[in-house]
Amino acid sequence: MKATRKRKRWNPKQHSRYRMVVYFKNRSTSCTFYSFDWKSGYSRCLNPEKGLKGLYKKIEEYGNNARCILIYDRTTNKLIEKYFNGAPIDLKN
Image (cartoon, rainbow, N blue to C red; front, top):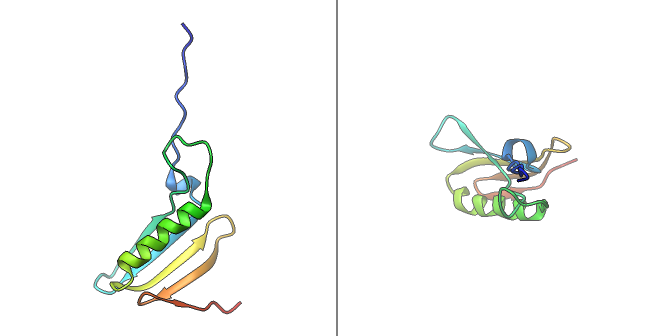
């Protein structure tokens, strides 16, 4: 019998394209969220647009309770979007 090797699962901290940091109004700490760019843990293809849509859902959920929300592109490590009290802020480059 041939032994089959099980594929490794995606790890959000290593394989996500985007990272979102949320600073809440009522807490002194921040929370970090990573985008889920795949349908399942064993999916072969990544879809960064899917991950960004998931982060937008989190912004709708936490927008009123958040003081500041920052979204970073992890490949370039640049800030791509910024929200203050749930409202988007233009980035000046």
